[in-house]
Image (cartoon, rainbow, N blue to C red):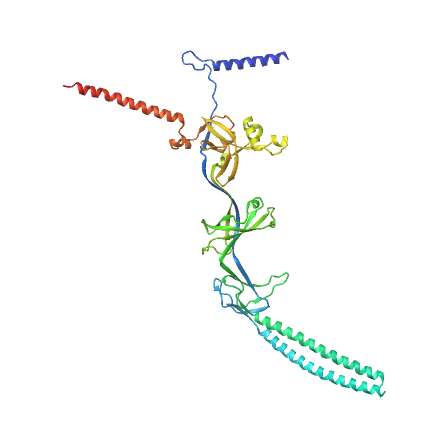
Length: 466
């Protein structure tokens, strides 16, 4: 125990001696007798805040399609006999697109007409039979009054009359059914001629001449013959991530970058945002469908193209901005009390537990002041890919430390820093400090005084000559 205490005492005496020697200076040059190694400055890059417009963007992939697009299908099963159009043709409403084989339907029309004629003849026969039954029944009634016939025979004639009446009614209903069937056949016959439902361009031609087209069922969508698109109005169907969808609203501006021409964006406007998300098969990411109208009629915009979309969800005019890489995160316990107090002031009203508060990360930037890094708690606003808005914590006169990443990771409040070579080569107006300006002014005055002193002897010598 005593040995340990003696060891601690010796170490304390040695430390005090080193400190005293470090502060002791010589009489002649006032330099420290014992030189202690100075702190090595971190090499950093800096940038000045800029006042500019900043726009927050939401990016997503999408597909170009026509606003008005119609898939032309057949309503009957038949073979294509005539197709006078090709893909890319412009068509008007009512133009012939294709003609289907109608021979079977024409035969059904003849059969239906014959069936109707047969039923009409049967109705005439039924009317005659019903008239005869009425006469026979009336005669039996007269005979029954004179008891010349039995009650059984009278009832038989009544039954026969009712039977003829029912036969006549049955033939009438069969005629109605046959006429309806013939009408349906005529409608199917009209469907063998397929005409354009609207003006547009044939953007996709699927079926071919001679192909048998079928109608759609519950499990089979049927044969799509062609697609007609109105290219005067185009739209983009984008898929926005669930994280960004709360920021997207109808009416916001957007830019569409086509894969075929990434350098020339196309203006667009949000017109509809889906209220329910979609989870693609095999993926855990939920996306929401966003429809935007393309505000351009350029010929390079075609249905089916893939595109990348940028949606302007927020915008600031004349915002104070800094590079995004300048913002770093520091734990609450690693910051000075003044910075923590400033952060608590900004977060007034936010109720957090002590455990969460102690583990909280705080957004800060480091400002270079006289070769020393000073921490600043900031309140960032919106950001784009390069810069972020500073609502508080930064002024236009500050010099912001932006990198490199290794130096930012080691920075602390009060840490000594030095400019990187690329920042030293900047124009004097950008990096010149107040001391450098004063030194340059002093050098200029000294040069002028030397020049004046050289000129004075020459002038006196010239005046001494006879």
